[in-house]
Amino acid sequence: MTAITNRKLAALIDHTFLKAAGSTDAVEVLCAEAQEYGFACAMVNPAEVAKAAALLDGSGVRVGTVVGFPLGQNTVRTKCAEAIEMVEAGALDIDYVLNIRDLRSKPSEQILEDLMLLNLASKKICDDVVTKLIIECCYLTDDEKVLACRLAKKAGFDFVKTSTGFGSGGATPEDVALMRKTVGKTMGVKAAGGIRTLEDAMKMIDAGANRIGCSAGVSIMEALPN
Image (cartoon, rainbow, N blue to C red):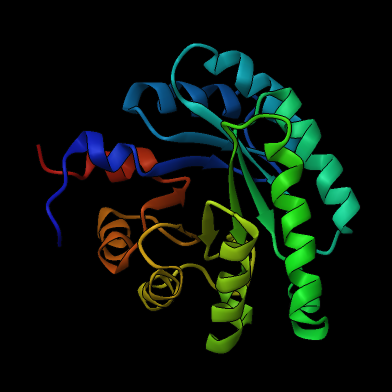
């Protein structure tokens, strides 16, 4: 396992709360933890972006959210409108869910055009926005994963992401390694879904991930030797 400092590990973590249910103060707790540990981002559902943005204002911790989540089956127009609303509400990280049925049925040129529209929808509102495309690896063949990653890179996305956490499987080191090999060194790879321990996180980092999406950020940090 690669050695890593507390600060560097925290800066790789998108601290996440994307559940449908939870305690009434879940977002407040998430944002407080994100500030305490110096996480890269606090990821919340769209309805809670404005609250998280207010809580984290001036903290240096970014607010992130998801678009077309968790199935990716919204129209491109709907996803664009949602992304714009989220940036206006204070989100700076936008994780879009790829429509994998389209990936399998439409020409690559059409998928690329759609992805370019999605990527630009949020970035035209704020040039500090980071975009990530969730390709939901558990449902794709390796060839489909490679195609999705190549199209995301061509469309200008900043990251490709393994999973929503709501599919039939989460991140694996093998998928992360394939994604890293496909996109090269200049694009981000986010591992998400089922990452619950420091060992899990480090396996993903060693495989090539430079962002970790998880709800277990605090316990992962607490497990890191001083």
